[in-house]
Image (cartoon, rainbow, N blue to C red; front, side, top):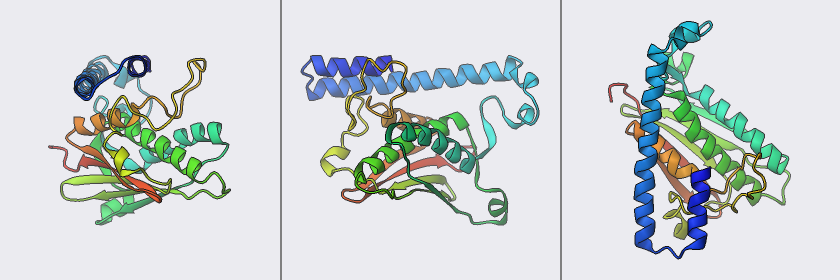
Length: 246
C-alpha cells in the first residue's frame, strides 16, 4: 500500500512521459516478481524445515507440502475469496452480487471430488480476491438504479494443458481505449483512497490489483487476461498449468 501510494504521488507531482512510465512499469514488474519469488521460497523453506507442519493440528499436518497444496480444491478457494470480497462490498455499498460457480468436469473423479490442482492456495486466492473486488464494484456502480444485481459467474474448466478460471460479470465493461492501461501500476478506474482512512481496507483505487495478480499467475507459467464488452460486462480469465510437472 505504501509503495502504491508513492507511485500515485509521483504520478500526481510529475509530468511522466511514455518512456518513463514504461521504465517504471518494467522495474515494478521485476521488483514484485522477485518479491513474490523470495517470499515463496522463504515460506516454503520455513514450513518444510521450521517444524510448523509437525505442530499443525489435524488434517493440515499432511495436506500441504510446505505452502503447496497437491490437491488444491479450486471451488473452495473461489468461495473463500468471494466471501471476503463480499464482506468489503457490503461495507461500501450495503449489498453485493451473488456468485454462481460452474464446473466443466470430464471424468468421474472430477465429478465426485471437483477439479483439483497442484498449486499455492494463497496465490490463487489473491488473484480471485482482486478480480472479485473489481467485478463487484463494477456491478454495483453500473446498476445503481436497480435493487437487483446480476450475479458474478465463475466457470472452472480443465483441459489437457490448462486449467482456466473465467470470471464473468455484467458491470458495464471497459472501453477499448482503456484496456491497454488496466495492467499499469499508474492507472486505476477507481478514485484514489483517502489518506485519512488509514484503518479502512480500500475496495479499489491504488491500481495494483490487476498487475500484481497477473504476476502471481505468470509465476507458475500461467497468465491473466481481460476480455471486455463495453455496455455489458467483462470476462477475466486465469490460466494455470493443469500438469504439475509444468
